[in-house]
Image 1 (cartoon, rainbow, N blue to C red):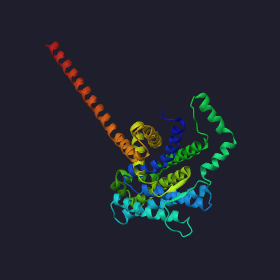
Image 2: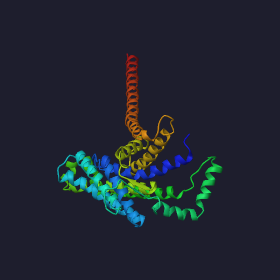
Image 3: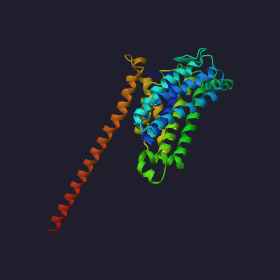
Image 4: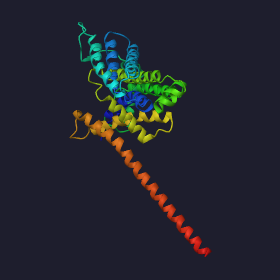
Length: 346
């Protein structure tokens, strides 16, 4: 059984990664754009926030700057595609490769010689979470919640800090609500229409190029925001921390949609948030298996995505098979009733 502290940490991380998953949803589902910039812009957000915090800037200002950096990276991908006429997949790959060097340079600004640097530690720095946690602890709520988990729920261990999960919940729910509102605005509807049918929206004199650039910018802004929060949560920024982020984002989207459905925008975005949390819990459970370790993270991620893609298809095929069998039996019953009616008339 997974320890409560590990489960708690998985939920915390899942809520933060949900912001990144919302960004992936904007490109892959709304815009129908296979954007691989995510692996680079996630690190851009983490590197920008870590660099500014290391220089003594306020964590909130550092996080907002990271969002702007991610927005610019996404817009560049959009411009490569729309103005440079480069294939969507290739434009994302090119930007992801370029961001690797850019991220090294950003983190290198913290050194005296401004050379490339692969990581920035934030162990002794103030972050959004540490500042909020101090306020939360002073109220005495940490001790009360810890005692409740141990004494009432019967867990042997419990986390000593609870402020982090509250602040990430507030941030993620706020972003989810803003995304719901934005996708229902005139611009949001135009972006959704661009992903569904580009020719149709062009017939209404809409500038699809600008909409694609804006959509990619907003998507990568959310991804960079998530990266900035993860850097402050983990207390470090590393140039390789973004590898596989696009797969994690897709896994969250697919799992959430498969379990909770996509009937409305509100339900879809909620499904993505829940999918990110479920993904982290599944990952934590997988690491409890004796013959798996942290080095198997990518393998576990791949298996989760494969199952999330294949299992719903199998379930849908079984449902369709049952529907066909039901219709066949209904037709047979109708035919028998018709034959009985004919015999009665005879």
